[in-house]
Image 1: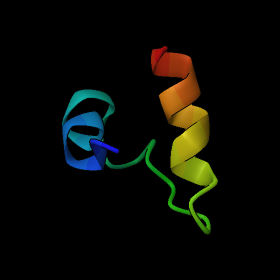
Image 2: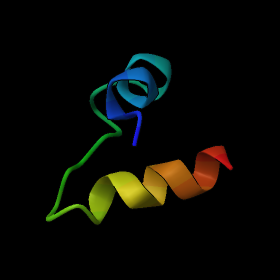
Image 3: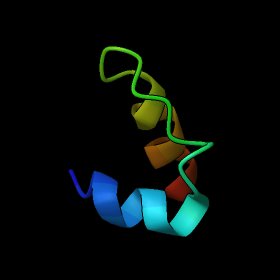
Length: 31
């Protein structure tokens, strides 16, 4: 996944890589 791009868009504070689950929640919001 494009985590680097996602972090740059929403900010590192919203990206919480909790065993690959945290960033999935943010990615879902982006969809």
